[in-house]
Image 1 (cartoon, rainbow over the protein chains, first blue to last red):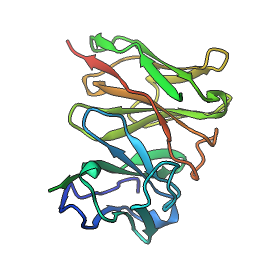
Image 2: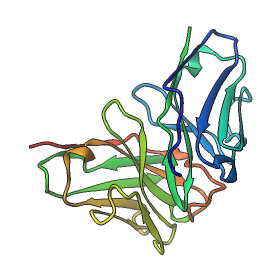
Image 3: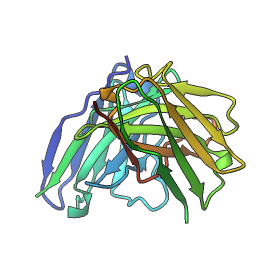
Image 4: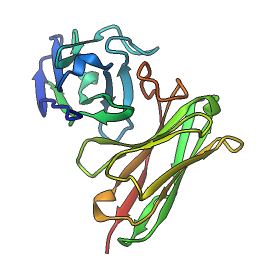
Length: 106
Length: 123
């Protein structure tokens, strides 16, 4: 199935760990990516190939993917991490996005 | 610097056509697979289409298949999206994005993004 489910929202306190999940049938059989989108801005790739960080992405961003769930973890969450986060995988060769999770840091 | 600049958005009536462009600079876009991704007002991201680095392969989301056509002119470093038979549900910000695999490889994310151009389908 190409349906990816994310929690609509998540709130964390500064310095805490944010864990954002993305669920889909046999999601772990494919690679997952994660994108960050701040209000009024274009998306930014923060994780690809399940757990790899592009150049310039802080080490506090990490990812995993197994079974039916991919996870984005932000350790020591900062105020600047407040954003919408989208998971993305493949259905055959077409890309599909999850519905997005709004992360609030307060 | 690495840059993608979209243009061509606007207000159009249902059933009409529109062509979007995306000009690349600051990187070798001719070696990138290029995508269109859209975002309806207040909604999430929706992948629309991809074209291989050499134009040899194209893939589309079911929601636009048969109506939209993606193309590129590597001599002009420009990506296009021809949108026909537009519907109200096509109203969105349209982003172009690139992945460095050139072939939509599952090993690559979309790591270059434009600022988006807005398409409004309105009668």
